[in-house]
Structures are given as structure tokens and as C-alpha cells.
Length: 231
Length: 302
Image 1 (spheres, chains in turn purple, red):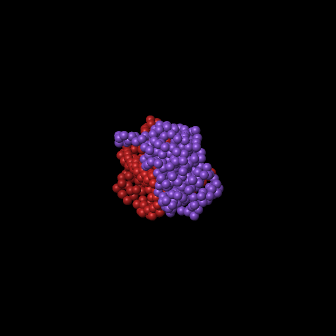
Image 2 (cartoon, one colour):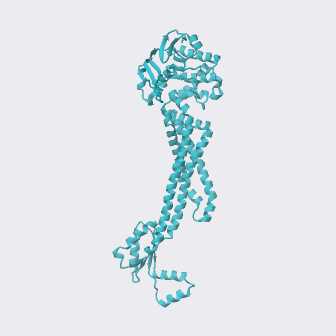
Image 3 (cartoon, helix red, strand yellow):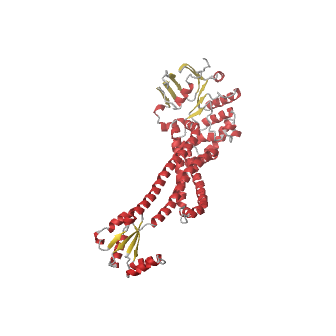
């Protein structure tokens, strides 16, 4: 379903210094449905990898295939079609500050062209999955960190994407909210959606007991089907 | 209406309501441009009144030889009337000229006595000609220079009047040119200020625009609500400007009339009611659309 093939990403130095190698010859596949954790220290290339999958950036070398489609070959004006098939959760939530929790989630459904009646039907359900029925009309600045992240997950999930990319989704959360968010991600996976989770949280990874890809200095040093956080 | 259009209109309107203070700042700078356009329009109308009033005071007279048959004069008059440059051509007979001279100098016994001394009417029949524009007198003069009129025309006083005519032509065309250049410069400046304010407002939303792209929104779905918001802002700016122009015209009307009774601001306002409304809406909406499109363009390349 998602195939990363010999990906290298090099950032040239603007000041004439030596270039930064963010990823080097990275290759792996994700079949559907799968829960894959990508672990590594800060700067190991986790976020770069997710940005490449989202076509926010182009790799220096290598290819990324999404269901046999080479995503580097997608025109800039058509990239939105790829992104509609991927739900994204960010560490800093990236919620629309001038939209309520309900509108934040509904926006994605509008983007994919859902009818108003579908939005009215699905939104309460998704809000109950993330436990935010009573916060639907609150703006992001009226929500706690955990609630914001749950809105972000609901937004990533509501249009039933093929898989979810979560970049350090618990990075700003306390242990209780971390656990809540992870429970939701596991539930999504169990309902049949692939999840790619980038994290440097040892406890979470060890708790999951799922596939773990370990990155170090931009290279894959380990890819275990029932992995643990080992650095 | 399709769901897409309904959604972008709604999104634009809600965004405007929720960012009302930013909107107020944008409306104020847009009003600056709209007001500038409106006042130049009214100023132009008022200066037209003034210029045509000055030009009406200018004419040239064609004097005919004393034995000229009045039929020939009328034939020349009708030839002249066919020229597009001619605004009026008035025939003044020998008797009319005498009568008007007598009236003008009624109390001046020396002049009247000397006129009586001459014994006969010394005045010549003439045509008093007004051109539509001060620059056209030279052309009329050359028309009158044609050989077929040589026998009947005694003289044309164009050359005596030329310095005055030229001066008036220079002043009126300078006013027109000056107003145009000044208004273009001010308009461009105000337009750039408004454009920049709206760009700054869109810059505020750049992170949200980036997120919209990441969640799969097409460029149309991102950009169009900003354009709709720009149109709403432009329409509000135009409506407020319209009220302001009316209030200012109303209060200045009396004062301007004291300077020149023929410049009636309120009359200009009402006679150009739809034109002003159209100009203002066009400027406001145009500015809203252009600045939104320009402002958002670079953030759509995420």
C-alpha cells in the first residue's frame, strides 16, 4: 500500500557549510492495516520521512509509492487528492483557531465533498469516539492540550482515510492524555485503518507491542514486527 | 446554488465575523481608495461646470463687409453650424449692433453725439461664434479663411483674442491634466496601502492555509473564501463610503455655492447617484478581489 524505496533526503547548507543528510537509503513497506511506529532521537529523520510521505517535500533520491502511484510524479495542483487519503495528526495540533471543534472536523468532510446531511450524521459519532460531545462548540483556545489533540485525531479520521500519519501526537500531553490519545489511535487501527506513528516516547512504544522501525542519523537500524524502543 | 458555492460564501462570511477587528482595519483602508475615487469623480464633475463656465465667456466674432447680403451671411452660418466644433453661432445684424452699443453707452453723450455725427449706422453685421472647446478656435479661423468667404468677411477678431483664448485653453487643460495625474498617483498609493493591509491580514492566516493544504483542501477551496471575504469587505467599504460622500456633499454644498453658485454638490451627487454607487462598488469589490488573490497566492504553494 505504501512503499518507501531507497529514500535519501539531503538539505544543502545555505551558508556554504556541509549539507545535512536527514534520511539515507530508507526502504520499507506498510501493508494495510498495520500499526507502524517510527522511533528515533530528535533529528533522526522521523518528521522528514512523514513530510515526504505527505509530499510536503521532495526526496533527493528514491521513490515513494502510494498504491503503485509514484507520489513525486503527482502535479503540485493535484497533491490535495493524495492528502485526502491520508489523515494527519501533528504534535502542535494545527487546529484552525477561528473554527470550533465541530467546524474543524467538519472542514475536512467539506474538503472531500461530503454532503451536509452526511456531516450531520457522522460528526456526533466521531465526537463520541474521541469523547468530545460536550466540547463541539468550543474554540481551540477553550480546550486543553489533550482535548485539542483529540479534535485533531477526529479531524484526521472523520473522512475515513486509507491511513493516519501521527507525528509525535503525544509530545505536548501529560501521561493521562497520552494514554487516552494512544487508546484512540489503537482503536482506529483495530477498525481497519493503518497508522504510522512517529514518536520518541519509550513507554508508548513498549506498550504497543507492534511493528517498530528505528531510525538513527537518517538510516533504518532496526525494523521489528513486535518491536521495542531500543536506542 | 451548489454546495461548494454555498460553503465558500458561508466560510467567507463567518471568517469576516470572527476576525471583525482585522476586518475593520481593512474596511478603513479600502474606504480610503473608494473615497478617493468618489471625490475625484465629483471634483471632475464640478470642475467641468467651472471650465465650461469659463469657456462660455470666450467667443470670436466674424464681421461682414457692410454691403454683404444677409442671405450670404445666413448661408455661411448654416455652413458653420455643420462643423462639429461649433457650439453656437449667433447672427448680430447691423441694427442689433447699433442698438446694443446705444444701450451700453446710454449715458455717454460724447460717444452718442459722435455717432449721430457720422449720420449712418457704422456697425457691421457679425456672427458671434462659440466653440465647444477653447482649442478649436484656430480650426474655425482656418475655415473662415477659405477664398469663397474673402468677399464677404471684413475681419475675424480671432487674432486679437488669441492670447486670452490660449491662456484659457492652457489653464483648463492644465486643470484637467493635473487632476488626472494627481488622482492616478494618489489612487496608486492608496491602492498599494490597501493591498498591503489585506496581504498582512492574509499573512495572519498563513499557518491555517498551510494546514488546509495538508488536510487535502484544493486551492479553490482555500482561496475562494478569502476572495468572498474580500468582496464582502469591499461592499461594506463601498456602502460606508457612499453614506460619507453624501454627508460631505450635503454639508459642503452651501459653502461651495457661496464661492460659485453654479457648483451644486448635492445636485451632482443625485444626478450621478447610480454612477457613484457603481464606481464605489466596483472599486471596493475590485480591490477586495485583487488583494485577496495577490495576498494568498504565495501561501498556496505548500
